[in-house]
Length: 443
Image (tube, one colour):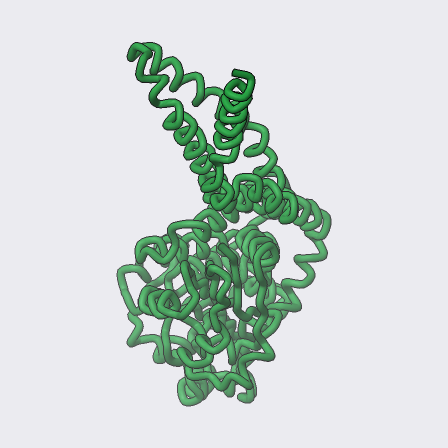
């Protein structure tokens, strides 16, 4: 089985392209089924976050046309899409997924959210039966590698996320958040993290708007804030100095008209907007309005870059762990792949054993049942002892990627040769005939 990863992320594609490929949780099962139906795809999973969309598949050598799938499924011109795509195969695909799960490929290195997002995608794919064999083992290996990185390094020692980077950016711009009022649009994990960071930096109060009002109430209560109904968003947004949006909406939450109304009601006092949603919640054109300062998720990369510098040493240690885990998985999967060949060799050896017993069946009939069982056990034990070293050699060749050595050992037990295994018996019979002929001549 071979592995293939095809996708794009914050390093290769701008947010305006990523949002065209973004897959909401409701659409993920259907899209996963469509991927599984692609020619060549044996197993498949889709990872869709604000920073990446990746197709992760296992195939038997007939490489699936994943770029074509992305272009057709999302109605994106292939010529526009392909320059932003990357592809990783086999060992490189394994290493990439291990790095993703360990947050080494994230915009904010060390952030904890990506591991949960990978697990969520894996869970959806497993429920559909799209992940069940080698790909499942790959993802389990990625989770183990991520756990080692978290346990053995300090890369995630402080709380970091896209939301916390957004809060840091707000602090840089305002200098101090004291007395500033914040509006959080959306009540998910990212919103909760943003609220916590802003309050930690000294924000005065928080309002929360969400389509499900009860969730807005629960989040607001955590910070002694105020929940507002989603339909009140545009009539209350002008009260906020800082607006952070993180919804799963397919359409824009704040357009040009709403932004102009906010500025008018604020009497042109500036407002700082951080849009960390993909697809984006805020029309990018509002950035042209005087007094409206809009930052989307790609604008946060420069702030996140300083985070990477601070974590450089821990990132190096984490990369070393990923390299070890990738090599361990490579050896393991090659050993698993050799299992059918080992079974074939064992079956051939068993056929030879049975053939020899059958040729001596007349002699064995004179033995008692206990003696026959002893002969059976003896021959089986001898076969297992004789086969031990060749089988171990096959496993070692598989682990080391020694295809020539592996093929040599397999050739020794080729079934076609096995079919001609009576070679030793006819020679014995021929010698017996010659002996009789010699006695006849002497007689």
